[in-house]
Image 1: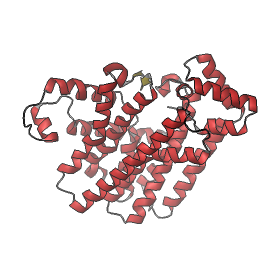
Image 2 (image 1 turned 90 degrees about the vertical axis):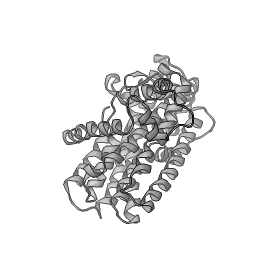
Image 3 (image 1 turned 45 degrees about the vertical axis):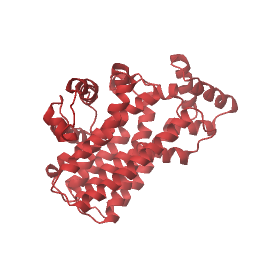
Image 4 (image 1 turned 30 degrees about the vertical axis):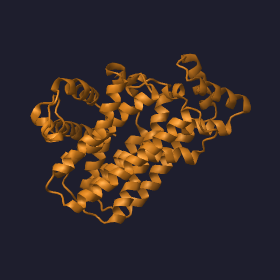
Length: 353
């Protein structure tokens, strides 16, 4: 997977540079007027830097794999474009993604993100929710100001953005309801749909954005979107696996956090279907406790391992990706970018961090 790390290392600093181009580390009057327009009364620059710029860049500076914008750039290149021409647009899925992380951590009452306390733990829940929500919309100003794009193409992107953001919230709603115990029984199909919306959305958005900018026909836009959605689903499954058996120093979040949150992951669903009545009852008990007790978390993980649910999840992830790749492999012309796209997909479902 060295070629994928090389790809991510090549794109990450370029993406970060362009994020800073559009979202300044420190707001001044010129930056705010560019984003919001001239004030009717007056901006409080100090307040906005404390409540927006500081927490926003706190998270962005922690790094991350930047795989969604890298996917965007690789898809664009595989469709015949020059990725350097669209680096500004790579900012959009990455900033939105980081906004969802901030809000997601509040909703899950998480402790750590990328090896440090979550944004709401440092700055407060009110600031975290507001800056997270702002990050859903702030990068769209890149489209608003770009005179290179036709109104037709802009409208197509806005339309897609609205559709995908609605799906993201629907997927998150299902996940929240499950770990709060509001649904008595969760099926594998329902879990997969949740992943397709919650995690697949921004991958699908990234790929479809690239395809629209590359001027391919609508059938190919949707096809590459389905492929990217599958990447997102497989990525979520692997993330769930790492949450149980990953190495803490690599993973960057608390191991067993999904047990604490009571999440109904694919592994939990599989275990509940296969387990003895005693083990099933005990696993549900621990999940409903929302415990941080390491012994209870270890007990739950042991039950999940007992029924081969981790291996099952890995096989499902591989099958999803194989089926998705077969679809685009039939029409995507051979190129170095296509090879990189396949390698990136494999990396995301086999990663250890």
